[in-house]
Amino acid sequence: MCGVVGIVSKQPVNQVIYDALLLLQHRGQDAAGIITGQAGKLYMQKARGMVRDVFRTRNMRALPGVYGLGQVRYPTAGSADSEEEAQPFYVNSPFGLALAHNGNLTNTDVLRGVLTTTDHRHINTGSDSEVLLNVLASELDRAGGGRPLQAADLFRAVRSVHARVRGSYAVIVLIAGHGLLAFRDPYGIRPLCFGRNDADGDIMVASESVALEGAGFRLERDILPGEALFVDLDGRMLTEQCADSPTLNPCIFEFVYLARPDSVLDGISVYQARLNMGETLAQRVISVMPPSEIDVVIPVPESSRPSAMQLAWKLGRPYREGFVKNRYVGRTFIMPGQAVRKKSVRQKLNAITQEFAGRNVLLVDDSIVRGTTSREIVQMAREAGARKVYLASAAPPVRYPNVYGIDMPTGAELVAYGRDIEQVREIIGCDALIYQDLEAMKAAVLRERPDIDAFEASCFDGCYITGDVEAALIAGHPKTAGDQPGSRLNLQGQVSEEAQP
Image 1 (cartoon, rainbow, N blue to C red):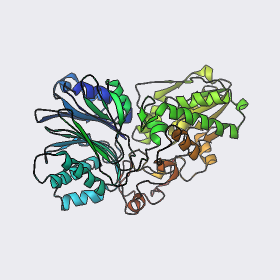
Image 2: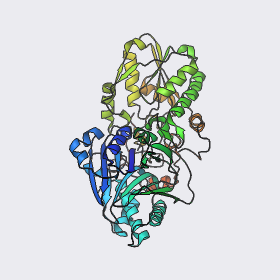
Image 3: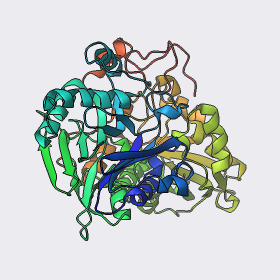
């Protein structure tokens, strides 16, 4: 899971990219990078850490130029500890290409082998983004045949990338002295949109619409699945469909948790989608227990708030803020390591005792993945004096690994893997556990855009939309973040170790 942004402007872009990355910080807190271009020369700064830590005044001054791109990273492939794997990645041939990528490739090892033996390209890291960049560079070499850059060659190269690469990818590429290229996988799994600054005609591409709006850009539309977009340094934009049979299958977990509520993804308001999920979740709660059993509805900050508010309204029960969040602690879901997540829950949240004491409390969370946060929060509610603690999840049980760019790499990490709801309830320690129904959740999001082909919902239903994952898992691919040496997924996402909550 990452956030990417790119811009072609008539003014210096370093500050605009920095501001956009701050708005995308929720998508990755491990590393950040910016590359800018001016007069055919490129300038780059990247390092591990949050945006505000990676870019100091001296770094910003060293990033001149009127076009550039940036990325915030949460590692789902490669090493989480390597400074070298911060993005963007750069190759000098052809033309000079720098790439930022959101997603996860499922045939990385196969591609790496072909690149080194057939394309004679050196891969220096374990990152699938470097592999993707070299595939693009190799195909652009073939398409261009050594002649000056032409948009038709770019689109031909992207078409070849779609033919070779499997998985999810939303990509922005800076081409030295020429402009920006952006493209999206043929299934449209990871989001990517573009907008325009009406005052200057500048064009920006980003993972979420909130990055555009925060920079004063007007959202025009999402980049279509399989589509490529090229913006030259004069601001001229060309687009072309580069996939034969594209379909729109956005990742539904974006609407559950990943995206900011003020973003619009593929024409769907994230905030409205979460309100809708709250309505359908309320129906599930009513089917399990009478609302009179609930004294108060309390969200687990922050992604669950819209769903919790709507649920409380539908149940006719009071909505209260029962937890105060320390905003200087990162999102626990995207913190590497179970021990780090567990410790950070108490650092991140503190209970308001008066909202819990002597009450039957319904806690609402956006999802339950590893169960670490849920178990700690239920215990905090009990320590604050709650008589009974019920827990409702706006998403269904997360039972399967995700291979498309979300850190759910193995079944061993998922509390619901191989367990029924009662077993999960016992592990978490709540008095009742209520999950959203999968089809109801899909319908809640589809209500905002009924023409979507399908959702990528593999972590809930085990169906991998690209169709290649089963064979890849048999062969021991893909190697995702969290895979330990010798630990390979089988068809059910199992690893050799026992599943631990």
